[in-house]
Length: 485
Image (tube, rainbow, N blue to C red; front, side, top):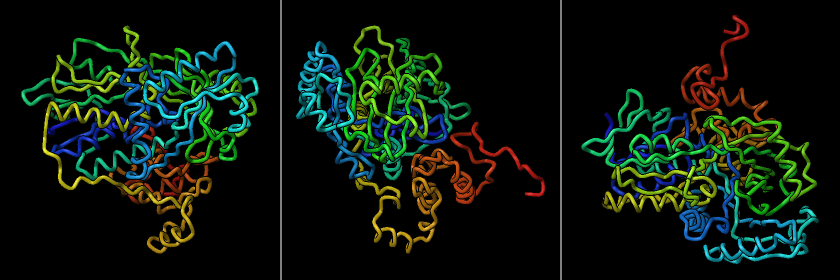
């Protein structure tokens, strides 16, 4: 049995942000993740948007934590070295009769504390974004909106947490939780983790974790969002994040640049029963482009390099509050829910980390840790480095001169570092998210065999053991010729 002060269930962006904040105190912390790596659930498949905070109802946790998370993002991106850009966002209104809805959003945003929010005429919008439809009545402009890399952001939280003493355990699916004299026994098959406090940050599975300890049941509905990602040749098609007036199912189809220079279009909003259904469909892809054309009719569909989908953890709440479910359970003191973290969960993640850590500190106070490491330096990026920096990296390690992924200009040195860092990559997808090897136009068609070889060498294992994303996704099944042995 392993004993900890705090066990966090879930290694997505929320769980990792909480882990980092809790590591400021003198406590032993474990993060349990059922998948093979961090950022394998909702955090890996979303829009990468840092919302300004005008959409959530005033007075809700969503509103408060969205705005606070947005305010924290710029400084945090510098401290933890992850890509973030405050590009601003537009909410388009296509009909004159709907203009009052923009006023409602503006008023809500001002009450939530969103700065410099304003309503623009169509002419002002076209000056900003010439590719916006001319069937336009007006738009809400929020200059504090931004875009971020959700993969590197999650990686940054996890690495910084690990440097400050947090232990990560992968492929540890929680099968039951029992109350004990010390607090709770978190059972993962044959392994038991005992802790004074448990934090439920399990994404679409947060209801299952909650229901293990509480008779007051909750239900999470997986809401699938399908996306199309376009080549970097389209990356400047729009500069702002382009929304449409939201509906009851969310903020509609958006069109946005990414921090890496691509163009992203989506998502759909489909409530499902299957929490593992991340398939894309012809119907979904058609819907994405059909509805995106209302905002930007000239998107070049031929420039799509990949499609993907993700699941949002929508809390089925009969009260209609549509809020994050964050708090300590009265029926199970020491158990903290962080459930229903759908949009704007990524934007709110830094603030959620602080909010939950404050709750835990009130219930389980400990002295602050001396020597807490506030900062983190990311993996060197040869694609964005200047000539002098590239030369210095190559002098330090010649592997930085060996280009593995030509589409994204990722070198062997970057891949090796991604494997050997705290909470390092062990899978092809782990390398992909940390370095972008395989994220370019050919979608790893050329670089995958070389990445496989590097993983085999650095992990000291046979390449037949290397997986795409976990134990059930092995890349190689055997040799095609006996003499190749």
